[in-house]
Image (cartoon, rainbow, N blue to C red; front, side):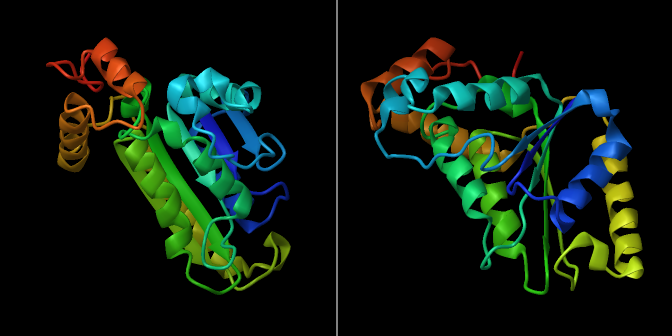
Amino acid sequence: MKIVMIHGQNHRGSTYHMGKILASKLAEDKDVVEFFLPRDLPHFCLGCYSCIEDETKCPYWNEKVKILDAMEKADLFIFTSPNYCMAPSGAMKSFLDLMFDNWMVHRPKKWMFEKRAIVLSASAGASCKKTVGTIKDSLFYWGVPYIKTYSLAVQAMNWQMVNPEIKDKIENKLSRLAAHMNCQKQPRVGIKTRFIFFVMKKMHAASWDASPTEKLYWESQGWLGKERPWKN
């Protein structure tokens, strides 16, 4: 299994360690590619809409394309972000903003509909629900059909201080998640994704686009007809 890990922090805290534990249960080190934010994409979206006309025109395309190329080759995405003020880290949120053109409402990538993902988060005490939920929402609207989340308040400010009993709990949970993820079959695209895609198809057919280039993109993929990104 090939894995891409996208860490919403440069430091290696509790959330990072959770991601590494999961990855080690699924793949050898040589099959895991890691990106750290903001190190590997240290920018904020400018709202310039250049990507809507042509994704390569994004001012930060050279950094974005390295991550996208790795994601296309991967079987599984592992997103990790600590809980910062009841939300993902600023670096992770910036990454999601910079990838907004991949949403189904704009120009989704066909290969996204073949991927699996898991989103992990740890906090010192507060709920991580909004942290994992924000990332999960983007993944869903990119078209990723199989998404799992796991979060936990570890009651510690770093991994070294986490109680051994909590570490055992994390280990057991991630072992169960790994057992479900270790599957070579293409994930099934669910009803919700199909419905959203149908709504977006109708919208583009009616030319309710951010730009005419979006309708042209959908036409070129055959999606305004009977073609679907989850069908070979």
